Image 1 (cartoon, rainbow, N blue to C red):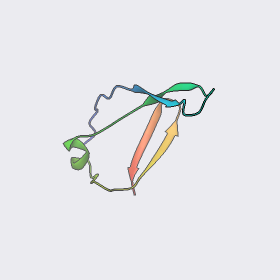
Image 2: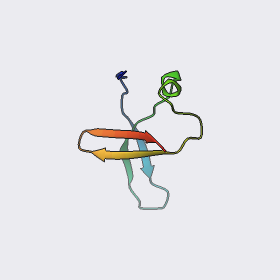
Image 3: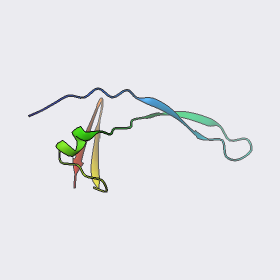
Length: 61
């Protein structure tokens, strides 16, 4: 069964650790929940993320 979950992207600030460096904001996604376990993911599992324009495919190894 395919289910859809809504996840909102947020921002994370990176950089700015040395004098003169720029702080940049980058998109961040955090996913968590019991639904991940029901989908076959467990704590400590390694995953592969395939990136396409407008789509991420997350697969447990």
